Length: 139
Image (cartoon, rainbow, N blue to C red; front, top):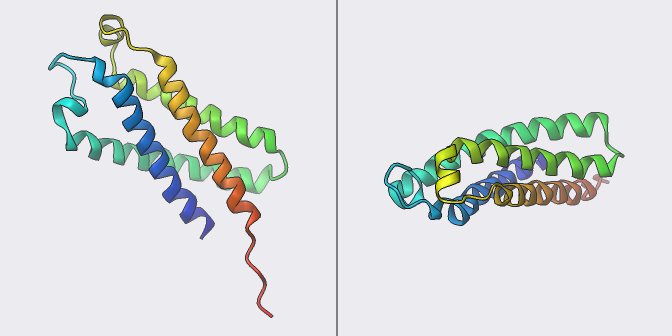
C-alpha cells in the first residue's frame, strides 16, 4: 500500500514539476516552432502525464532498493531524491528546449533544477512520513 501511495504522490509531484517548468520557462518562447502548452494545450498535458509516470516508476524502483539496503542513512535518502529530481530536471530541460530557444529567449536552467529538486525533496519527505506510519498488528 505504501508504494502505491508513493507512486500516486510522485506522479502528481512530477506532473506538477513539468507543468511548473513549462509555465515558468516555456511561456517565454513565443515562436510557433516550439510545441509547448501554449501551442498544443491539452496534448502537452497528456505528454507530461505519461513522462511523469515513467519518472515515477524509476523513483519507485529506487525507493524499493533504497528501503532494502540503506534504511537508516537519512541524509543519503534526501540527497539521493533531490539529486535524482535535479537530474530529471536537467534532462527534461534540454529535451523540451533546444539550444537556440535557450539562447534566444534567455531560458534559465536553474528553474528546472529548483522545480524538480523540490519535487524530489517533497517525494523524500512523503517517503519518510509513510515509513513512520506502521500498521498496527491485529490482536
